[in-house]
Image 1: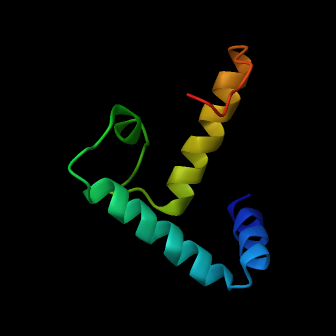
Image 2: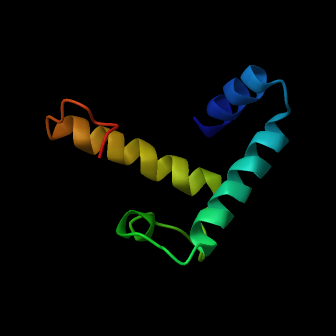
Image 3: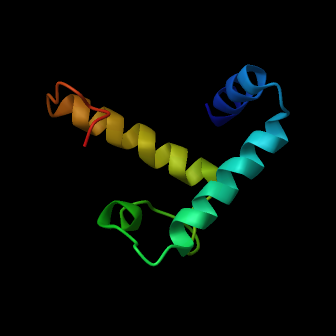
Length: 78
């Protein structure tokens, strides 16, 4: 699933899949190095201090399905 997401984003923005993944990792690094960690950040299961793009995507998809199963009218809005 992640490869498909990366390919779609790469095509949309005219860059390579590697660039998409690097940019996502850079954004995650910046977010997790911020002094204002949130409870939502702590909920992401990860193998190190900062999640990989794959770990983050897996968590995001899980949250969308969980909220949809709970009957949330807007599962993407917290």
